Amino acid sequence: MTRRKSTRQESTRQQSSHTQSRRAFLRQSAALASLATGYGLLGNRATAEERSPNEKLNIGVIGTANQARFSLDNLKGENIVALCDIDDLLLGKAGTDFPGAKTYNDFRKLLEQPDLDAVAICTPDHIHAPATVMALRLGKHVYCEKPLTHTVAEARLVAKEAAKAKRATQMGTQIHAGDNYRRVVEMIQAGAIGKVAEVHTWAGAGLGGGDRPTDRPPVPSGLHWDLWLGPAPERPYNPAYVPFKWRGWWDFGGGSVADLACHHMDLPFWALGLRHPTSVAAQGPPVNAETCPLGLEVRYEFPARGQQPAVKLTWYSGEGIPKAIHGHTLGGPGNPLGTAGNLFVGDKGMMFADYGSYRLLPEGDFAGYKPPEPSIPKSIGHHAEWIKACKEGSPTTCNFDYAGALTEAVLLANVSYRSGKPLAWDAAELRATNTADAERFIHKQYRQGWAI
Image (tube, rainbow, N blue to C red; front, side, top):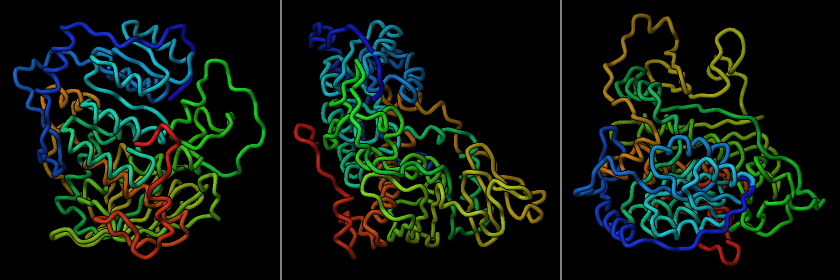
């Protein structure tokens, strides 16, 4: 959540009989069931009987600035009926832009607003699971920014709650809706570079480093610090955490891998049908109990899937990014692969892909190559996909079943790094079979009053 100032009182829980009957109708008609999409992902379907696609949803948005503002701008075609922020100044600004919305500092009170159909959760990572689980249990459709959760165990819980709630869900990996990712998936799955058993993924500068500050500046006026902490252990306010630097602190974020890997590892997960790794081994600088590393290298092993071979995927971030991979420089002169992206290594060649481009390598070997005809439909937009699913029961491509497994894999990097050991991973039991030290990083304790 972000910062801002408002004179508004937190809204009372009142609702007309018309709104009550509408909400009852929505909750009955929007029950979702699993549906396999044309992309090989699992989606959600609402029965949506007698529901007009033209009827606008009542949406609440938790967080109002920066990435949250991006979601607000993409959702403003619906009814924005509730806004939440721990900063009164930011909340006041958003309230001016959406004068019909009730305003809150505490997301728990927003979620209890009776006329709410759906919610977008755009907060720091440590708030994602508590807000998402509560929303699902109250029968709301949920859009949540990446990573889906702060811990591996939370990702598994959120996926289970989503399956139980049968509501439309979407994780905010917006690049998944881009045309380039679709074309890369089609070519990989068509065998353009043969069978892929190796992938290298890299992105981002290091986020973290340093020790907990000892100074205690006053909490800025209008900033509700205790609500910003939410389920995290209590600590004094410091600008070292808010507004953006929270990503580098273990209690709130997960460094570069949590920030960026859900975007970049999404592509090999999608193209290769990956799900749960069998082993994860991370290495980086000495572990700091407070802050995330400035660089990381993580080696994943995924099992064979049908006719596809087992895959070794390596993630690099910050100081862990190598200068070259398979003889191709990263972001340098000559034949650069760029500052972020994926290198797929197949038995017939290689493919580099980032958000907006791809290249088949060696380029001379693929002269005259014609990609397959597009088979994955063009996206109507990442937020629009979710809105459509809420109203009609159509599938979403980053629903919480898919996004939960991706988030688990991403966050296992930090579990291995912090425990100081490679993990022999048993996904069914959600545990590392070779070390009990990992358990405290798979799960976490919640501050009193914030347990899920």
